[in-house]
Length: 405
Image (cartoon, rainbow, N blue to C red; front, side):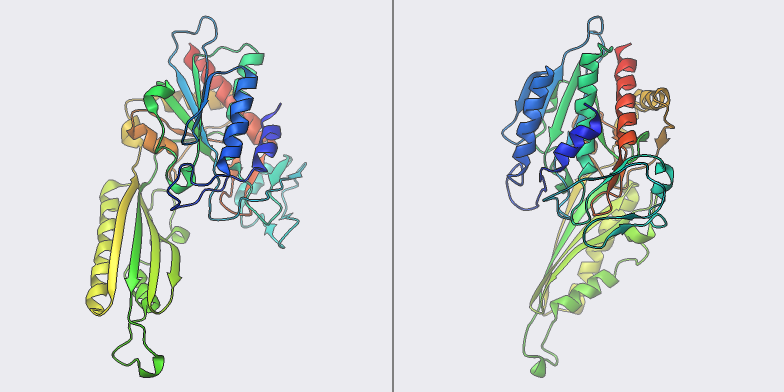
């Protein structure tokens, strides 16, 4: 079974995660995919197949004969899809022999326009997979799951060389909780890779330092006809907070190593409002400066509105894993060589986000990130190519062989 065939099945299962539920997985729907993967891993012949009480799926493929001394290598992907856009009722659509033009999706009048998504240029002639326009696709990260499952199948069926392979599929990565209940010692891998990147051949080992900021604003609500010198409009106060932040430091105006403040949510009314930000920067000093900027913005606006109340909850989410991998650069070198052997051009670039691998690297499991063949994640324009997924599997097979010695 090819990777895309597995993916088509996985994509139809709703695994949308949700913040603030207090459970793990955060949504009950994630259990369906977890149980399906548990059964498939057993059917393939992997050993020690388990689903933890927190929904983490793990399994082991013992080393091939003669490769027992090779380091144990882990491959990890996440089951959930981002709550930013609906992951329920996903209907994948195949577009054979893509001609390089705009892709008209069947629903909601949405079009993936070639001029807006330059990645499409290199997809000419491939078979693309999209959603129907009403949901996201879920290639992030069900493509990664399908590729890992296909890797295991091919290692077994083709008797390919490999050391011990440890597999894990996590819930809730999209809400920053994928590694919360990951048992690194029990996993058994010496090194690992997350399959959670975009285009095939991508190799990532630098990610953002990340924090989440929540601002609760309590204003003074009175009748607008008698509001002079009394009313404190929470929504206007929220606008003042945002105006204190540098206007150029937003996702739409930054790239590469440049960090940002992202206002992810603003809701409320005159009486009370809530703001949610994510704060990102690759450089630790600039990351700390951005957090200080957020704190000063809240202080300044609070001073200007003494009758209102502003409460800031600022918490770190994860850190740049580059420092944790500096003594394990063979992970990057071998990934580049595996890409070349698979006929790919290896591309190393910073992650403008985070993965489970970032946190796992700080938990003692060095874990860079590899591309899956997808792009435009977290929305209705998401896309993955059949050929890209096949190439990602080939790269993984060569990677396993390189570590097998």
